[in-house]
Amino acid sequence: MSDEFLYGWRQMPRPEFAEVLKERIFREPPDPPRRPHGIHISLLTLLLVAIIVACTTPQIRTPVLQATETVITEGGKAAGRFVRLVLTRDGKPADTVYVWRLPCGEGEQSIRFYFPPDLNEGPPRRVHIMLIMPEEQREQFFKGCEHLLSLEISEEELTVRFVEVNDRRATLIVNEKEHNALLTWEENGIAYLVFGDLDQIPREELIRRTERILLQGGRGDE
Amino acid sequence: MPIQKDSREKGRSDGVDWEAVYAEYLPRVYNYFRYLVGVQAVAEDLTATVFEKAWCRRNRYRSDVGAFSTWLFTVAKNVARDYFRHRRQEVPLEWAGSLADPDPVEEVVAEREERDRLAMLLARLPDRERELIALKYGAGLTNREIARLSGLSETNVGTILHRTVQRLREEWEVEDER
Image (spheres, rainbow over the protein chains, first blue to last red):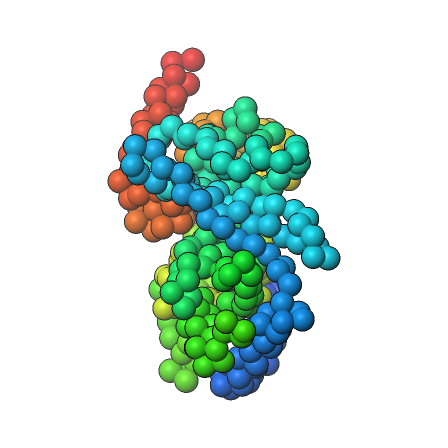
C-alpha cells in the first residue's frame, strides 16, 4: 500500500451534488454593506466606557466575579495553571469555575492530574473545571476519570491567555467557536470583566482599548 | 488558493473569490469526509454543512490571522466532531451496498473490492489516526497544515501518519492472506 494508492481513493463529488449545493449556498444575497469601521469602533468604545464606568461607580461596584491564578510547580517548574473564577449571584458567591490549563506537550506523554489546591477547603460542593488541553491528550486523559469533570471545553473552542492590563495580570478567555473574548482582572479585591465580540474588534485591540480607557478615565476611587 | 476578486474588497473574507474557493475546496472537503466516514451520502451531507456554515460566517475569516484552508478545515473538523458525537453508533455499510450491486466487468469488481477493503480498514482506525489520514490523503493537506489544525507538532503528524500507513499495510496483507 503506497501513498498513491491512498490518494487514489479520492473521488470528485457528483456533478449534480456540486451544482445543487452551489446554487443553494450562493442564492443567499451578500451581506448588506457594512457600516464604516469607525462607527463600530465608536460604538464599542462607548460600550466599554459604560462597562468601566459601571464597574468603578461606588454604589454599583459590587464584585461580580473574582479571578485568581495559581501556578502549580513541580521540581521548580510550572506543571499546571489554574484560574479560579468565583461567580456571584445577588452579591453572594454562587459557582466556582476552575480553568485548568495544561502545557501543550508533544507526543504521547503521560498526563498528571493536579487538583486545585483550595478544592478541599470548605464544605463539599460541586465545582466546574474547564479543561484546556489538546484534544488528543483529552481523549487519553478521560479514560476512566470522566466523573471528575463536569464541564469540558476543547482547545479549539476556548483558549486562556494571561495578559497585562495597566501592569495588572489579566486573564483573556477567548471562545474561538463563538468568536468572542472575555477579559478579566482583579484590582483591590474587585474583579473587572470586559466582554468583546471578536467579529467587531480583534483581541489585542480589546486589551489596548481597555488600557487606554482606564488610563484616560483614571481608576475610580483609587 | 482563493483569489482576491477586487482590491476594494480586501479585508476579512470580502476579498475571497468564493467561486474559486468552491471549485478548489469542494473536492477536498468532500474527500476529507469520505475518508473519515466512508459513506458517500454522509460525506455529501457533511460537505454541504461545511460550505453552508463557511458561507454564513464568511465575514469572520481574516487573511491576516491564518490561511483560508486552515479556517475552512477548522469548520470541517467541528462539523465532523458534531457528527461523531451524535452518530457514533451508526455503522457505515456502503461497501455492503456496492458488493450487492453485480457488475459484469471483473476489473471494475476487483477495484471496487479494493476500495471497500480500504474503507473497512479506515473505519477500524482510532479516531485521531483516521482524522489525520483523512486530512492528508482526502483533503490533500500538508503535514504543516495538519499540524496547525490538530495542535500536534509537524514531526508528530509525520510520525503518526507513517505509523498509521504501516498499520494499514499490515492489515491489508492480513486480509490478503485470508
